[in-house]
Length: 206
Picture 1 (cartoon, helix red, strand yellow):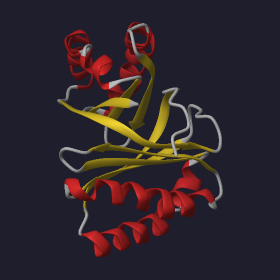
Picture 2 (cartoon, one colour):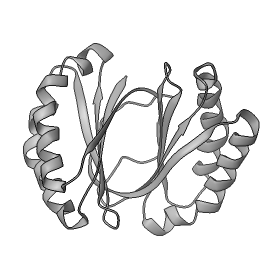
Picture 3 (cartoon, rainbow, N blue to C red):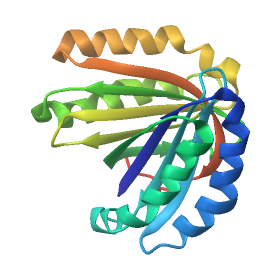
Picture 4 (cartoon, rainbow, N blue to C red):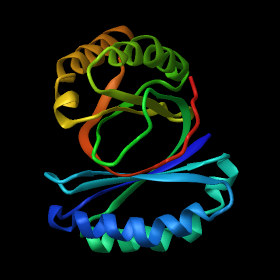
């Protein structure tokens, strides 16, 4: 399973316009493409960041759509008044306690490790991050996407409410510090976002 994520940092005032564009125009066209399983959109209304992720049955299916989705990405950038950062991933872990719903909240954590350490990062996520989060109030799901060639990884933990998510900040910080001490992982970015569109449709991968 593979995914493409597009992150745009722009004008917070344009968040709702971007959500409408993705829901009404982008999602019907993209999800009709061969190999596409679904789409999600996260939004930080304070900073103006949106993160759209599409899921694909194979890397070939994902890469075959590069030219088709590029104009849609450009239009989203115009709406938000920002530039896009695009990443392509292998979906290494997907675990759900509850199906995704719009209005729930996610913590997205980007990190970089040595490519040789990607497998141990996956194991740490399963054995420690996911196990710790599962016991917390409001936990819904956790996922990890990786780029084995570069060592870039992106982990997401989703909770029912913003308060549930905020209650796990200290635990999440402790897990990041533990991983950094063990393997010298660099955490490059962290964001907390509302789930604006919940339609990723990735099966359980643990």
